[in-house]
Every structure is written in C-alpha cells, then in structure tokens.
Amino acid sequence: MAVAVMAMATVMALKTRPAELMPSRYFHERNLSPRPRALALAAACLLCAGSAWAQDGSSQVGAAGPTATGRPSVLVEPRFGVMQTWTDNNRLTRTGKDAALLTTLTPGVSISTTRGAVRGSLDYSLNGIVYTKSDEKARIQHSLSAKGVAELIDRLFFVDANASISQQAASAFGVQSVDPSLANSNRRETATVSLAPRLQGHIGSVANFELRANTSATNVSDAVIGDSHANGASLRVSRAGRAALTWSVDASTQKSSFKTGAQNRVSSLTGSLSYKPDIDWQLGVLAGRERSDLKDFVLRNSSTYGANLSWTPSLRTKLSADFQSHEYGDSFSYNLEHRWSRSALRFSDSQSVNAANFQNAGAPRSNYDLYFFQFASLVPDPAQRDVFVRNFLRTQGLSADALASSAVVDTGPTVLRTQLLSYSLQGVRTTVTTTASRSNNRRLASASSSSGDFAANGRVLQRSLSLNVSHNLTPTSSAVLSVIQQDSEGDSAAQSTTLRSISASWNCRLGARVNFTLGARAAHSGGLISYRENAMFANLVQQF
Image (tube, rainbow, N blue to C red; front, side):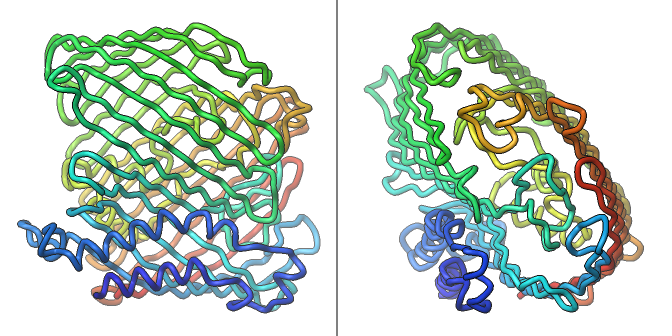
C-alpha cells in the first residue's frame, strides 16, 4: 500500500502543471511547457506501478517483503530537502553582478525493486527555486533517473524502460556553471525516455532468438534544437547451448530524426563468430552489409567488418577491445577495468556515431558511476546497489553527478570519441574520486544541415579534470573538498570556454535519517563569456 501511495505521489509530481506551482505570469512570459516531464513519465510510471504490483501481488510472485537476506525486495525512501545559497553573481556576468539568496525546496523519492515481475530503480527530485533580493523569477527543475525491466510473460516477453531528466548546457561555448540553480540562460532541462519490448526464446535445441523493438525521444525545454526521436527493430539468432565456437546473425534497422531537420537511417545484416578457448578469453570476428545515410543524407550500401577481444582473468579485472569498420566512420571501444577491495580504476577509449539513440554507453562519468562499479562485489544486485551507492554518497557529502563532464545538447549526427580515466579510493576515513576525460565530437553532416554549435564548427573538443576528497572527521561528520576544471574548444581559438571551481563543505548526520551540509565555493569562467562567482550554501535533507 505504501508503495502504491508513493508511486501515485511521484506520478502526480511529474504531471503537475507549472502554473499550479508557480505564478502563471512567469510561465506566460517565458513560454515554458511541461513537455520534458511528460516524456519521462512513461518509464517512471512503469517502474512505480510495477513496484506497487509486485508488493500487492507478493503471494503470487514472491516479490514483496523481506528477502532471504532480510532486506525488503521493494524499497521506498521518500525525502525532503531545504537548501539556502547566497551568491554574489546569480546571473553569471562580468559586470552588474546580481547578488541573491536562493531557497531551494526539494521533495524526492527513491524506489527500487529487486525481485518479481518488475525490477529496477527510480530516483526523482523536484526542485522549487525562489530568488530573494533579485529580479529573477522563481522556477522549477526536475531530476529523474529511472531504469527497469518488466517480465510480462515468464522467460519470454520483456520490456526494458529508461528515463532521465537532467540539466545540460545548450552550447559548449556559452556560460558554464557548476550550480544548476543559478540563473544561467545556457542551461536546458533535457528529458529522455526509451522503451524496448523484446521477445526471446529458443528454436528447438538448435538456436536462440531475440526480437527487439525500440523507441526513444529526447525533449529540450525552451528550444527545438536537441529535440529528437528514434525508432528501430532488431533480430538476433545465435547458436544454442555452450560451446567453444559459437555463431550469431544480426539484422537491424534504425531511424533517427531531429526536429531541426536531420533524419538518418541505418540498416545492417551481419554474421559473427565467437571463439572461447577457455574461461578467461573470448575472441570474435564479424562481417556484413550496411545501408546508411549518416554521412551526407544519401543512402548507400557498404561493407562492414570487425573484431573483438575480451580477457577476464578474475571477477575484479577485465580488458576488452572492439573494432568495427563503417563507411561513415570507424567505431571502436577499448576498456580496462580493475577493482581492489576498496578502490577501482577504469580507462576507456571509445568512438561511435552519436545520432539520437545510436550512441553507445560510455565509461563512468560521475561519482555515482564510479561507486556503482566499485561496489559491484560488495552488492551484486543492481537495484540494491543503486540504493547503497546513493546513500553512501549522501552520507559522504558527495554529489552523485560531481564528476560529470559538461554535457551538451545533441543537435545532429556526429562521430564522438571519448577518452576517460577514473579512479576511486575508499580508505578507512578518507574517500578520493578523480577523473580526467577528453571528448572530441566531430560533425558528420554538412554545416547547412546542422544546428547549434555544429552550425559553425566542424568539431567540439572538451576536456575535464575533477577531484573529490571526503574525510570523516567523526563517525557522523565529514569534510569534503571538490576541484573541477572544464575546457571547451571549437574550430577557432576565439571559440573557447574555461570553467574552474573549488568548493569545501562540512557534512554532518544530525540523526539516523537527517543530513546537514554547510559549505562555500568559488568559480571562475574564462573565454567568450567570463565571470567570477562566490557562494555559501547550507543544505538540510530529511529521509523518511
């Protein structure tokens, strides 16, 4: 019953119209719309409703109630936060600084399901921001991270769902900031939702099959640049059973469309062979044909081929390499991962086409990703690990997104190369997370068919360095130091931005479920638009 109530509360928060929460004049003047929240609603509803169903139907599916380890299989953790921020430069300008006091009210909820017909996790926050001693109007921001799988027919029919709402930079060369609550006109609330039903089974004792459809949509608030949707389908037939030498045949088609005009299609038919001489090694090759228009919007047939290698000497170490040749640009992925008992190291160098949902998953890019990887041995179940990592970061006073590089709204097909080195260390009293990343985004289409940054640039190069150090002063308090530097470059030296920020905070647990943070930061931005900003902040979060 409690899960059902929280599910309804989350859905109502997502569906609430801005005019019901803030003065209507503000939204009329800015012509805002609730579309980003509506896009993510489907996946959020799926997980919330599935959680309620799993608990209500525990007698049939055994999903609710405590597991054999004593942990509940459906875990709901509502919370409420109040944050006060004083800044001397709310509008992030060089002159005419707007000193202001920001009050942020943040109701939120985390839901995870570990067993039953629906499994996954959801974390949602609604941020209501009020500006005092400033002409800036009050606003609402949403933050959502949801992923789950619903097993609608036992071992046969599944639906995978993902949804997110986050703040992204509209331009790599616009104003950059570390605090999304500041009045930054270069910030866009970006919502993405994807659904992928799949049917899997066996063809006698000879082969396995998986038939999958997918649809996804991205919506950017206050703009059409970045709005996109994609649809596709794929079929894989592979050899059944275990053997040293296996085969598979893959057929897929995908269509992506950006609202600014770019539409692309990719269809392929490939065959692959995989050889596993022992438990540690796996080798593979593939070859096939493709038909695509990613390069110049003219459909062309071409050949594709590739090879891959994976070496896993232990559960803590993995080395992998994958290369594929395509007419529109080669793709590759080289990864090295290693976990120690209290630390983790990961390096990746990857290149892939980035067009709507063609992009591949990357290496860890945030505190959350790093510790989700590090705690894989400690908490094997993904849903339980999600809750564990979020609680760990909250008690350490670390932001889940602190290491994320300056993400920019996608505006068309590009070839994206990303290199990332990340390391995390959890000592007896000190926790350290550090990352260095470099991304080179190269335009595929002509400038006339591109928009945003790629209308005037053939490439956008971004580099990021970050360091977070958390030290436990007492069993219930810690000090945190965060340092971030981000750089962006275009085709010319004049098109560049630099952001440097340093912050220090004190985090304390006032009770079993109450956290308090007090801190200060200094930021400096250079390049096309430069500014300096200093701030102090206090945050109180009550978990229920």
